[in-house]
Image 1 (cartoon, rainbow, N blue to C red):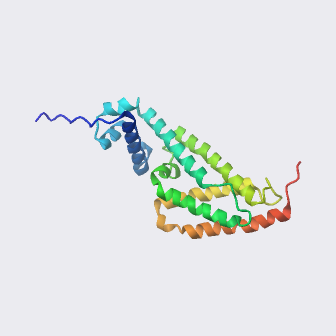
Image 2: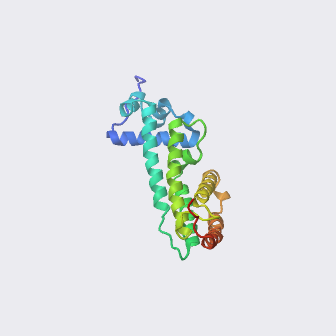
Image 3: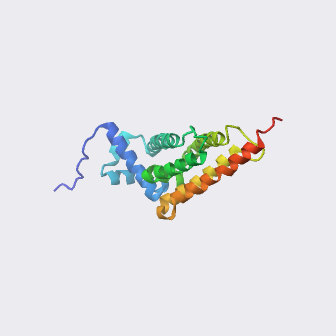
Length: 215
């Protein structure tokens, strides 16, 4: 026996790239960003380092491609789930169904959401910057939803849609992390019902207060 490592089975370039990206994502989700390396990816896929370098110029290029792919997936999922077409006759029910759908989205695709919700200081700066940028995109969508819920006004004397949107983002990120770490600890229906119950008083306040006067 020669003791040589057998050649990896050939596959189309795009399929190989997807395989390597999926492997890197799984490593990050399981062990964090510090654990990912060309060597670790090659071992997991059972290929040689040149096979990885043939698909990507290096670890930075691989991680950039992974970030772009996962960013697109995450934003598409979020924007598809957070509809701004609110039933103004029952906005609380709309919000409750949205929260329930978001929880389902996270638990159905943990590999996408773990590197986002469980991000740590070890994550590369480009990752943290992208997550911050996309958080703003989602916050704007939520603020639009809140404004529609509050009868379409951009603000009221007592209820500021921007503050509500920031608060809902904080709640969502906290429970998103909990869903990924200990899903049995989250009563999704109770969470959705509780948050939706806050809408009624806010909407009544908005109607009573009227729009904010322009300076």
